[in-house]
Length: 113
Image (tube, rainbow, N blue to C red):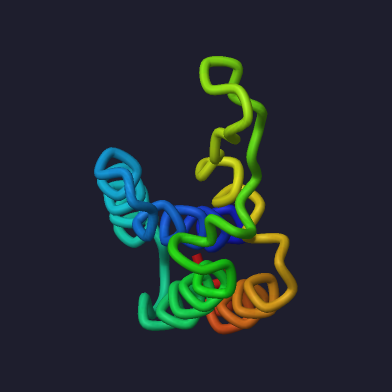
């Protein structure tokens, strides 16, 4: 259950990135999570909203707050790492709180299985 909820948060983040491939992968991943989960999928809406708020804090796609590595092909410019950013978004306090809230709401559905 925790993996599903955290995966949904990461997938939601990917759907908000500028690159079409990442958007598509995020959408597909979120769909898989929704299809295999138990309980009311509406509890995931809070996670998606919180991830969107977290991304908005850093500007367009959280670029100001995104992990960046040195790009040897373009010295002086950084290479944004949106996949790393999305993988780490689940550790942001507000996103983690939304995840915990969803887990608490879904727990009865998972325990009855």
